[in-house]
Length: 329
Ligand code: TRP
Image 1: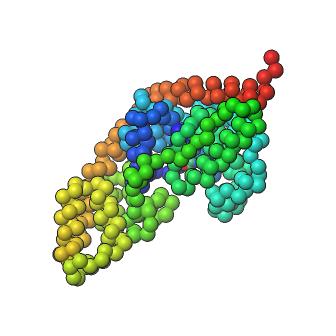
Image 2: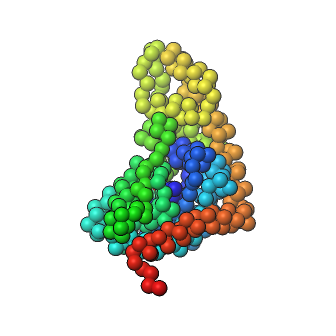
Image 3: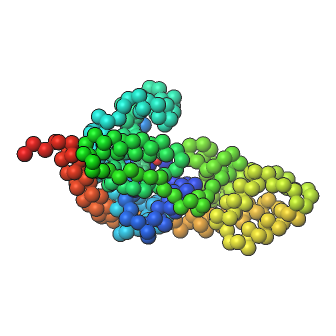
């Protein structure tokens, strides 16, 4: 089980970091992937763009290979059981531990004018998403590991307090395909690709062919090595890393050999990377656009996903209410 934020556009880093993992998981596990639309209310109270964003995130994930026939692909707000479990878990969460959460402290710094209680209990809502499906494996990035640890603590606390020796909730563990985790560097030579930093240093799945070409053209280079076998600076290493992700192996070999021989022309390298990037992104973008314009299809898959996730949710909540003693007849 995992949740996908519905703010912002997906970029190449999201594709190689998260979505490709989901696509691999769908063949081996029973998967639940959810668009976290309620979580966005903690920081984005204006909902005029919400529907559009939810549709786009669904469309982009399907365009990347997530199969709504195989996985339950659903929206958080369609499962009302989430709100109920969130309420119960809030009584097990201590304000002290919530205030200490790294993401909470960051948000307080970023939006000092909107420190709402939903922001404080963000990890409780995330735990409700996970525990509602009684999920065991949660593919998340490093930035979400603290939240996942809190979900494990809430599960343990619930089991201890109400389980009477029976574990109602399994303890969810972080999951990834280990060595397969690839780093996707940003185009300006500063760390990894991210949507919040420099917009021009990230390639979005919705970028047009020309936007992609222009961004790649502006990637940081220098005048090139002047002697054979010069050590490679980080920002050139990054360009090669991107080339490895989208280009054919012999293309990578050719430019590496040119670099070693100090005969490389960065203009040609970036032209090649730009074209290969365009060929990689274009089919995804076109598929996503077609899906996003098909509201009937989107409604169908959302209903189908929610139906499947709701089955789990209902049976979990029956167990939860009964374990808690909230059944009087
Ligand atoms: N908080 C996660 C993020 O910001 C999104 C999320 C919401 C999530 N619910 C989840 C992730 C449940 C994993 C499991 O990326």
